[in-house]
Each structure stands twice: as structure tokens, then as C-alpha cells.
Length: 470
Length: 111
Image (cartoon, rainbow over the protein chains, first blue to last red):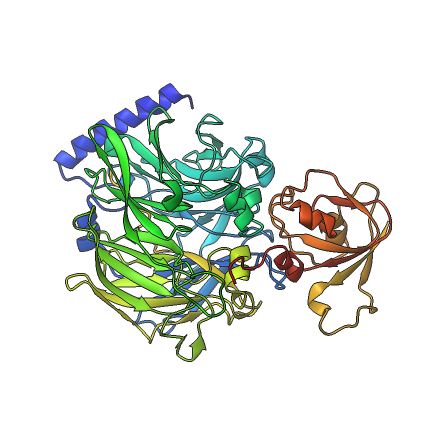
């Protein structure tokens, strides 16, 4: 597909979308608005969670776990299915849908296929979830095909309206810079490079806000830098990122790069507000342990530090332990920014009804180096809270505890032998409070093949980090 | 070439003199491919020399990397670490493998 065709198709979709909204029509996947997602969605009963054996003594492939999260079910809190990947060594990390609410106006499309990339292997899997409790692998794009496009290390998966899928790619064919973007066609078999090589250098996460024709992308490092593990020499050598790139979504070019500076090292998850009219968003500068607010003003994108997590003294450490906020999300009503400080052991929620002035609402101190809660149901917590996911209604928050296999080995080495846990808190979105649900525990350490790590979480009917509105 | 593969996880339970599993490596073949052919597990990831999951430590013998070993720093190369996905032996070798070898590359920098 040429750029011209793509732009034309895009504008046709936009036209159709405006027409449909005028009639409150809703033929496609997802929900008409973020508020509709809160009102119309049912409670999540299944969670899909990525499980990993890469880089451990367990000689087995990574897998997609189906977890029963229905309190009415006899299997509540159990891993009821494991769809194994065909090859070992993937490092499954993030994943996403073939369609979400951005296609809510497009009849015939379903939220049905999970795109599951291997961050180390550069292998991309397509999993059919028609049978929700028994997902089935239906297509694999092999690493050689990805390398032929001079790309590697797939990360974030988003689904622009219309059925195609975008993936951020963190490296070139050698695992060096520059990274770029891959577009999977609607048939989930065809693919092409989306951007022109060299438009950006480093890549990590991205989010798009169609009504403003903008995409924002963040920066981790080259795969050959971050994949072996974290080395301070690499930070000092400038090999880790500190910029946000604001793209013209139609033209596929970077219109503005914002340097977050020394306080913005390793900006990871970029979250625009769900409201399609908003130009506000947040990013977690993980290494600097700061949260930045970004927004558009007078035609320019701006970013400003709005939360600063202080390091804490620890007897075993030469320097204060940084908080390392490695994941954030926005509740579907855009009222709360929620995140996890992996090293400190804290899950937090900030009121961001005024995005420039976040107000700390509540937190749970658990796991990590300082968490007050050290075990759940007598299961010792050997790592901190990491990847977070929230129910669409904003009343339940779940998280896992593994960051990335090699980084786990440096900061929480026991995670390899004990495996990851998935935990849950009940959230009161009116009072701004959260409470650990000690009745809920999913132990990935207790699996037939051996203890597994676990990373990103998704629900079959959409979640706070999948759904975008046109 | 003959390469003896020792699993690092066995270090604690076995003496240094105790042997590993000997495998045959064809000329130009990379260690990981030969180990897989022989059914000897070595963890791996990218298979391009970028990620270091397959790192081994050479106890004796010599190898050459057929691609640039991008995942290893100079200090790793000097001390005998090799990337089995892109390394081929040039003499008979003895090689230690497993996740514990990879984990030796980088420790917690602040602790």
C-alpha cells in the first residue's frame, strides 16, 4: 500500500466515523466512547498474560496464559490454559489486538486476534481468541522476514482503525539503531515497514491520538544495549533514551522531538488521555524516576516533570535505591494515573483531573526493596510490582512482577527460580482509594514445566492500555 | 571440532574436573546450532549476537565470532565470554553455558 492510498483510506475512515457518530451507530469492536466502555462493559472474566521461560534453566518456549479472573468460577485465580509458542527464546513482553475501539465504527471487524511478538527473537505470533478459554496460534512471521526490513525487537502493538496493526521495533537487523515501525496488514499475514528508516533513532512505546493526527513515541535503547542487561556505563555513554517524538500520523514523519533532559532518562510508556479530544498525556521516565506530563499548546508539544519519586537509602546499596516507575496507565475515565515503582515496591494512584498538577490519592506498599507487605497467602514476594492493568470500570487493578528477564536477574534474581506473581487491588474510583485483595493470587512459580516470569496483562474486551478513539 | 559443554547450573554439585557433554561441531557451524543438533540445551534469544541470552564462557580452546558480538563488551570478550549463536570453534573447546553465565555479564550496578 502506498502512502497516498493509506492517507486516502484514513480520511475515508474519518469521514465514515463522523457520519456514524452522528447516528450513534456502533457496528464494530469496542465502545463508542471511553465512558461507554465504563458503562457497557462487563466485568473481566479472563485475563491473557504473557508467560516466559526465556533465559532460564527451564528448557521450554514462552506462552500465552489464560487466567480465570471470575470470582464466580471454580477456577478463580488459576491459569486455565497455556498456548505455547512454537520456538524457544522469544521473550514475550508486550502484545495487543488486531482491532479496538478505534474501529468501533467499522462493521465486520472483531477484536479477536492477539498479536504476540518476541522481543528477543523478533518472531511475531498471531493468536486467535475466538474460543476465549483456549486461544489458538494461527500464524507466525519468522525473524528472517523482519530482518529483511532492517528491523528487530518488536515491542508495542496498537491497532489503527481499519484492521491493520502497528508495532514499534526497537532495532535494526543487527540489534543496533535505528529502530522503526512495522505495519501488519488486515489479513495479519502481509506486512511492510511503516516509517522511513532514520526518522527516529531509538524507539520503545507509542500511542496515537487520531483526532489530532498525532502519534507519540518514546525511547529505551538499542536491543544490543538493553537486552544483555542494565549497565551504568551505557547510561554514561549516552546509549539510553531521553526524548519523545511527536509524529504526523498521516505523513509518517516526526514533526517535533522533545528532549526530557537528565530528569527524563528512559521514557517508557506513553499514554494519551482516552478522551479523543485531548492532547494531554503522560510518560514515565523510568531511570530518572519521574513522571512527565506532555501536551500541545500554541501549536507546540511541551513536556514538564510533574511527579518526582525520591530515592530511598538501603543498607545494602551504595546509593539511594531509585523508585524505578516502570509502568503507568490512565484509568478509562482519565481521572487517575496509576503506576508501579518496581524497585521500591509501591503501586500508586494520582488524581490527574488537573493533568499539570497530579495529586497523590493512594498507594499500596508491597514487594520490592521496601514494600510493607512481603507475602500474599504465604507466598513470598521476591520482586516489586511492575506491569499494571486496570478493569474498564476502574474498580480493579492487577499487576505482575517481572520487568525483563536480564534486568530481573540483576535487581530481583530470585524471580528466575520463584517465578512471577499476579496480584490485584480493589479500587474505589469515587474515593480515590485502593486496597490489596489478599484473596487473589496467581502464582506463575507453580507450573508443570517450572517457574515462569509473567509480564503484560490484557482482557478479551479491551482495557485501559489498548483502546483508542477516533 | 569436539566441544565439551558444561552446564553452569551443575557447578555447585559437580567438581571442576567432572566432564560435560561432548558434541561434534562441523566446520563453520555455530556452537548453538551444533548443541541443538545434539540435544544439549543452551538458552538463546535473538540468534544475531545482539541479546547475550546464549552467552557461554570458554574454559579452554579457541573460537571465532562469525558476526560482530554486539551484546558483549570488551571486558567480556577479554575474559572468555562468547556468544554461542554466532561463534564457531577453531580448536577443540571446553565451554560453560547456561543462564548463570549470562547473569555474570552484568550485576546490579548500585548494590
